[in-house]
Amino acid sequence: MRKVVYSRYGGTEVLEMVEQPSPTPLLGQVLIDVKAVALNPLDWKIYEGQMAFVTGSKFPRGIGIEFAGEVAKAGPAVGRFKPGDPVFGMLDPFKGDALGDQVIASEQQIHLKPPTLSFEQAAALPIGGLSALQILDDLAQVGKGTEVLINGATGGIGTMATQIAKRRGAIVTAVVGKRGVPLAMRWRCDHIVDRSSQDVLGLNRRFDVIIDLSDKLPFAASKPLLKSRSVYVNAYPNPKDILLGYIHNAVSQRKRRILMMKPNAERLELLGRLAGDWLEVVVGTTFPMSDFRRAYSETKANGSAGKTVFVVT
Ligand SMILES: NC(=O)c1ccc[n+]([C@@H]2O[C@H](COP(=O)([O-])OP(=O)(O)OC[C@H]3O[C@@H](n4cnc5c(N)ncnc54)[C@H](OP(=O)(O)O)[C@@H]3O)[C@@H](O)[C@H]2O)c1
Image (tube, rainbow, N blue to C red; front, side, top):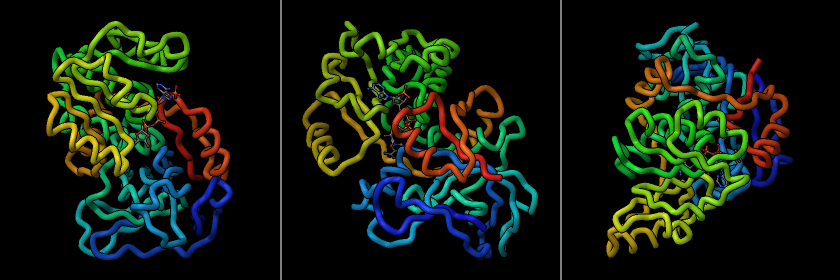
């Protein structure tokens, strides 16, 4: 089977496709024929070495965290799945190797694919959906009437956070690029800021919660948009900000929090149900797996409204 791997940190030039023997699922594991893998900014942050303080220097490494496909073989003691079942799931974010013809996952890492979702949509659900729930429920309590600003409202996490916050009755201001405007309108966001023509810092309003998914609106810059007891969340953990946030939160009523997304089997199952019902999973662009270098360089350079997904055939 084919697998995309790399043996040193660097740009897309370090990625290569190799042939490997098909792996055997061990106790509690499932072998999956992969049909789709979603791209994440975390993929390139890892292969470029930006997360080396977590990922270390062990090579070769695979790439690709969230996927969908069909069960090829169930290992010993697997009770929930059988060959042919359509499934989706995510690997440990720092041990992704889903981009290939087959992947091994533990039984807890996968769920049955909702029949209404394509394989591409199912692959695009876990990281955005779990991150959104963690932000809206654990880091900031977003519910009916919460005034929330989502900066990057139509990216992988933003599409999920925006729809869920609206569904709960929050008052949502969505900051989007031009191509995100129709999505924000479709989800009836209360205020839409098209960043190509309006500066978010020029808004004469204050929010209970600010969620920055762009890595471009730091806590210090967002202060004019915060109330005295607001919560600010971003998604780019680094040791300095974690320490600063800890000190800041000890003395201030305004809180700054950083997403450190954790896999969560119950929430992933819930997301599958929501996506089978009203939650829209937006696949912006698809690439064949063989176009892995182009897919990463174009997505990194140009972004995508919704997720970019590899189709594996
Ligand atoms: N810490 C964790 O556990 C964790 C987990 C998952 C993700 N993340 C991180 O969270 C961030 C968001 O993830 P994602 O999957 O949602 O990424 P994404 O799909 O690339 O979305 C990023 C969003 O930011 C928007 N954006 C870019 N420049 C902007 C600007 N100057 N002002 C406002 N918005 C801007 C993009 O809009 P356009 O497409 O229109 O440019 C896009 O909607 C990434 O940095 C990712 O690495 C962290």
